[in-house]
Length: 432
Image (cartoon, rainbow, N blue to C red; front, side, top):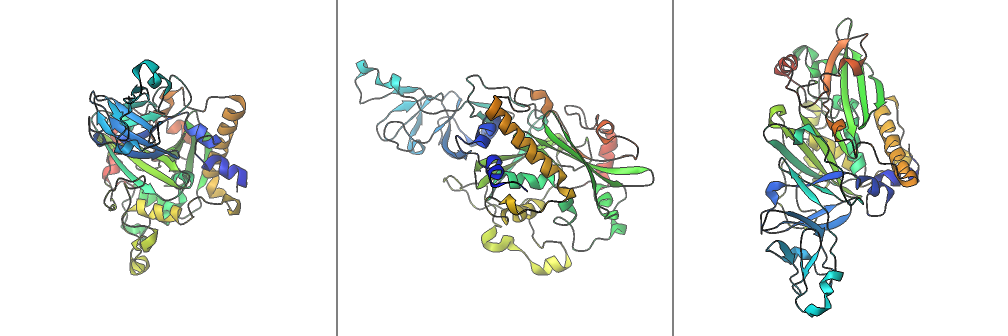
């Protein structure tokens, strides 16, 4: 368990908080390119506890600025996006994407009053359909991370879901490999009906306790959870935490999937879950339904299933078909588990076990990074080393005397073609 201070340290992300400063050291995804049209309507964006306005100028530049005009505080959401700038609807003051004040129409030109005004603005970069923003203190931002799913050949498929809980408790669900055998499982498991050699087969054929090896990496943390497979072999589930708030899950087969999950804090009590996959690495998934979008700060990517309707749990289905009785796919089941902890979980009451080794070590890694940055001005992991993000994850079977980190090294390498052996494994039934 964590102390109250430690829990706040790594959960809170607002301006001026230690955890917020850590987050702001990195580029974060802010929107997709197709959401912003040149001279089109601006969009409200809430990220890291800040209310911002995103827009695309006449020439195609992306602006992400404070929502309040520095003059009298009127929201720029109601302003005019025109001629390479955004103009406040109240008095016509105009700003470019850097926050520079271009015009103050009612002020005498000779006063140069506009030169004294600056609107908070954050640099943005587009890459392969995703708009990234840097909200940190550096005058020259660090490089974008080399994330394969955002750099691959062809297009990427992006999905987003708003969760009504703190970013860390949502992310930690991805670091917990045991829950997939319960939360996402059928009500009754018949291993004899499963295809040998698939991830589901290895997960369920022996309900022995997973053993864990958790190790610190240049990008964050990795785990190898293992249990016996066939004679003389071991089934491994390999997954990663990548600073500041990214994960790569232990499925499907290692080397066969090009994707990443990003848990971008909206504020302390909400997180926007991004799933990004290349078309080359795409796998079949079931999606839940969304409420119609609205224009307010929390008005998009809201699941129809939510705490107000008990996630549409079906008790009959829970008794006869699935372990939870919650439809909409594994994402909705994860949402139920993490949102039902409350907006921000009080970790002083936890009772963690051996199976929580990755969660325990990842929290410590984040706490250490926060302290190092706060006390010694140490640059957090991966900020200036974009190449360390070139990873893949997944499951595989190795000879029982093989070190999993060495044995999976080739399959963990990003920016290479999918391996034929893993394509064959996925074709047998895959994993989810």
